Length: 250
Image (cartoon, rainbow, N blue to C red; front, side):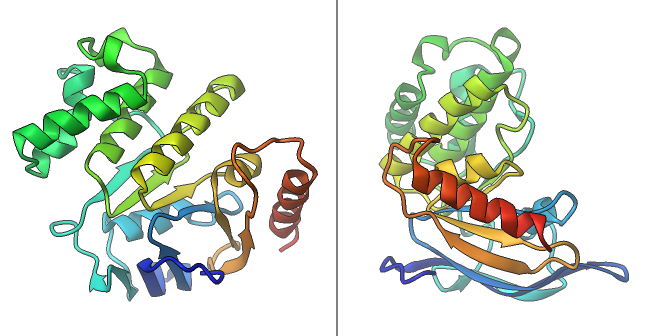
């Protein structure tokens, strides 16, 4: 965990996943600190989404363990939120009700739910559109709804699978800044998968670089840069180049 003084929130030990005879994830080990923003990068097809699916318990591991606060990860006990590549809004619910949906499922008390809902909607700029339906807003706003819903449940672990990969560059930068503000304010623990190296350096405190299949952690890169970050900062460029070279040369 790179000498991080924060307590360990997530511990992954010997994570292995096979599909029949195909070994996809091979004995992966790492920790995530409480409140850390960790990015995962790697070559196309290396199993990044499978990796997140195992962390979320959407699919079982073949071997290994995942712990949250020292206990075996359990979706019925722990709040594990997942933001997918495509927006996952419920078309029959308003923006407000979509953001509140996770809190309803988790059984938040009404007063706490309303207080947190107002706070989250204000933070992501959705208050004025809260009464609209998903088919009345843009694709980028749908993804903002999904991100807001994920943060609203005060997750133990927030997993994000290339959430801005379908957006143009300008929108992506805007939403990345919004994501960072949410994370800094709400102090969530985030694991963020992306194929975009610049994005990984921009948002993360630390980057894990994955190998080709069978996937292992090839390297860990600390992103020791102040925020807000500049894409033309020489140190930013240096870190981006380092990660690029790690992915280029297997």
